[in-house]
Amino acid sequence: TGRIHSPYKTVKEAPRQGKLSDKFCEIEIFPAYEAALLHVEDGKYYVVLYFAHKADRTALQTVPPWAKEPYGVFASRSPHRPNPINLCVVKLVRREKNRLFVIGLDAIDGSSLIDIKPYVKELDEAEV
Image (cartoon, rainbow, N blue to C red; front, side, top):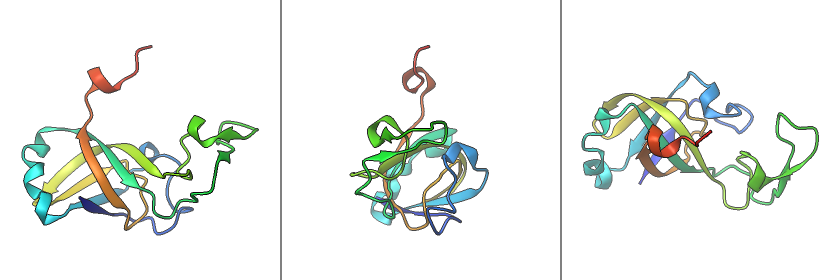
C-alpha cells in the first residue's frame, strides 16, 4: 500500500522504539490507495504496520534493553523475528496529497507499509 521514507538507513541508526524519536518520517501511500486517506487529517495518532525488510528473520531470542537474560522474540518488541511485521503509534504532523508526515516511527528507509489505522485510546490502551 505504500513505502516509508525515513532518516534511518540501517537498523543501528533506528531508535529502539519509535516513541523515542522526534525525527520526521514520510509515509508515501501509493496512488492506487490515495482515496483511502479521506479524512485522515482528522486524526492525530495512527498505528502504522510495516514490514521490517532488514530484520534478522532467523532470530528467535533477544536480550531486551531492560533484561539481563534472553527472551523469546514473541515476548519482546524486537524488530528481529521470523515474520518481521512491526508497528508504531505515530503522531500525524501533516498530509500532503498521498504523503503523511509523522513523528514516532522507527522504520528503516524503504520499508514497505502494510497498513495504517487510527489509534483510538478507548480501544487500544490496555486496561490497568
